[in-house]
Amino acid sequence: MSFFTADICDEHSEKAFVLGPDYKNYGGADKCEGEIVTVKLDKNNSELIKLLRDVDGTGKVVVVDVDREYYAVVGENLMKFARDNNYAGIIVNGYIRDTFQIKDIPVALYAIGTCPRKYIPVTQGETAVPVSFDGIEFKNGDYLYADTDGVIVCAEKIV
Image 1: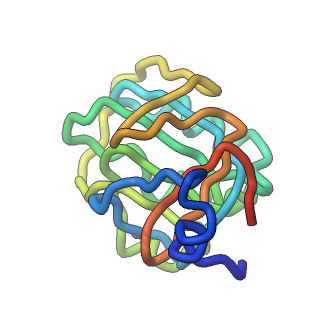
Image 2: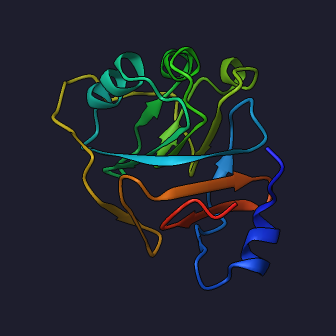
């Protein structure tokens, strides 16, 4: 991957929407890019598990909007599913866990922070629905670029 988000913002400022500075990368890949696949969760991650475990993620980045109560929705097992199914990255509007274990899994994982507990009761989630957070609307098929400077979203692949 030869892009830099700063360069994309300079060259395509009218097309690049920037996610705020609260999102940090906890994964083992320094950058990622790909077509967006959206997931809307309550507190439980069962819908995200199905997506990461069962669907080929080649060329894709999963954007997860979750009820922002203090529960983790991505950890070591889900990162292994993402790796095994070729996802480039995951962006979580919420919390993750197992940071020691996931730092070497070659998938980018941006999140607001960490939490050691997960929500056990299964709740329903939705995939392929528009989600909105931090002033950005994410839709299936949009394109995402992320590196050490941040995360940007475009309506289409521009690099």
